[in-house]
Length: 134
Ligand code: CO
Image (cartoon, rainbow, N blue to C red; front, top):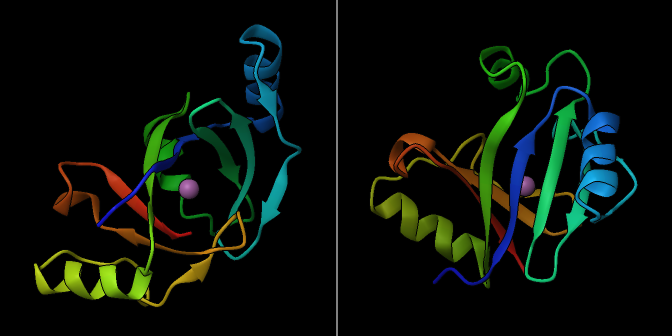
């Protein structure tokens, strides 16, 4: 049902410093920062040959990742994003197994302009899971 690994997201306290680290120290290609007000984050994508790393820092005062950064001040791995063909079908199937879908349960448009949903980390061995319809 799930397909490719789309990206791994890392919460960072300071986005320009993280971009510099990946671009200059690791020699990766990194996108320009992109504000995602609907998600309360600013993101930049590290482009790797087989996947992407999403660097994200809080945007605004109600950012959903602020609590995570308060607990992990130097940042940390935040979520894993898997690609799916039909996000509503996957959501309904996950719900039928008892997995919790975060928020309203309706897909939001994510950083790539595609519908996304998040599944509760307590239902996935401690990993916050993002599903993205491709
Ligand atoms: Co993501």
